[in-house]
Image 1 (cartoon, helix red, strand yellow):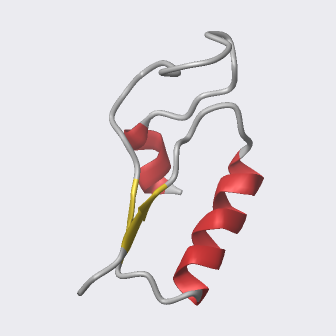
Image 2 (tube, rainbow, N blue to C red; image 1 turned 135 degrees about the vertical axis):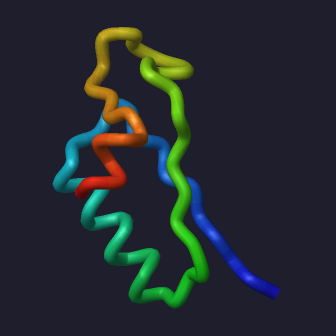
Length: 58
């Protein structure tokens, strides 16, 4: 069995996302996923949101 995680890139900072990515990697997950939405799916529509193409470069 392979385990992956999807981390939502909304209402967070790039620092917190990197911390979560590194934690998931250290735990041995097989894949880390994001989504291709250009706006938050829930909560504050003006919250910080990172779209997938920029995140892939990080």
